[in-house]
Image (cartoon, rainbow, N blue to C red; front, side, top):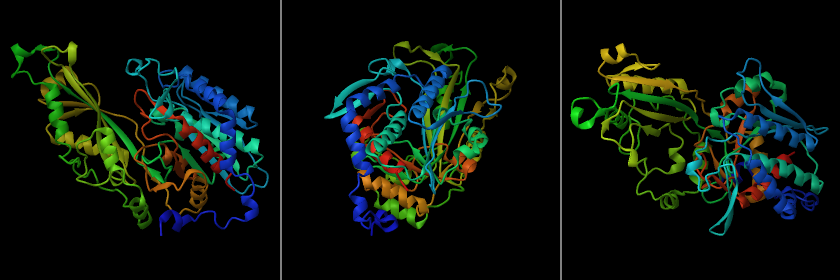
Length: 492
């Protein structure tokens, strides 16, 4: 029997009298159909508000806007912070609607901040000016945070409006927590949660972020990978040198860097750094069953992404995202294209991103990479090396550590998961159940600060250009997301 059915069942046993009432799905569909033009305008106005870390004033404006939206709907609302945080640290927006006699508190999470933008990379040059386009018969809205993650916030608010308009009462206490620093590593989120413990606890945290399955089916993920970053800089001459006069004599830092990086993985993408995979917690029987029953989208994705091959030696994507990964986010050295010059550059830098499964601490994984660099003959510094250090060592690497997060995973047979899966399946299911998402969020901080289990639900289209230029959302995903959020908010 399918795991989705085996673990959780469906609604067959629901009394006929209850089925005769308006369902959250019907409420969501009716509300968005009646107000689609108005809602689209409101969503685009929300997307027009800049929300990147480099603009603290813009983030504050977003937070105040969202607080006002909650208050307008009758929620108690606050902007949460913690003592001792740096000036300009984004607020977390909190809202609560208590239900008399409720036996459960449901916390819905999303984040209102977005990834950095480079306007020149966007088709219209204006990431915060939403543009509507029909693509393959689907209406899409292009703007930063359209699919990551303002769509979830807007769907949650609209879902509440739809339930209220349909006269469907809440059965649980509902809390919203919307973070303003997720795309910047959630650096201060744990402190904010700890300082406001009584406001943010709940029976479950629903992490409303991320794309649907490539088939279009909703995904319910029971965990996320951790994340760690390192920036590695290799040095050459103190000033750029003529490649003819000094080539073959002065070491080229770009070449040294790519040689160092190439030794970290084999031709199938397996990481060769010693102990890189040590400590990962294996998947249990239910996890493996869920993975076996999930759609296999590899061939369709290869075609969509123009990939002649994939890493992993033939293993499917859904399995590969359960392992630790080592990715090169970017490399910079010298110039290319029209700006290219015949020189030996002064340095070369690569930013490394490691996604980590449960059981591997992000600081330990950083240490393993640093130890590997040292084993290759490099003198490693934590700050920019001095002249003496560069002269005293043949190979010098400056490695900067960035903040990371550990993985989290909720068992698939957690009791409250029954209701979450039933709610999602009642709208646009059956959902795809996966033990872990390949992405990273502050789930570990949530669990430690609140004691609550975290379950992921997602609604954006898989091809939304998340984190990249021309980010977009298929608008039908927004309307379907309203239905799903209504079912989750209405859970008993």
